[in-house]
Length: 92
Image (cartoon, rainbow, N blue to C red; front, side, top):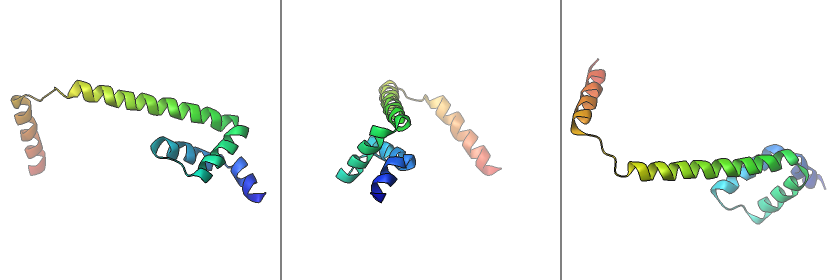
């Protein structure tokens, strides 16, 4: 019963599991612990939804920016100016 209380009242662990779930698959135990916590914690339930929305938006922005920049290239004059600025800063 002591472990169950730790699961129910540990929002820090729940947020860690929520973020971990965005990156990788949770173990069966982690998944059960998270479900138990989310069943009784409205704040973490809201955090879970917000985290999912933010992750989806960031992935979409990254995907969109990669499509836009895939054909973009720097012109030779800009590259030359940039290289000169870098060399000047290194030589100071």
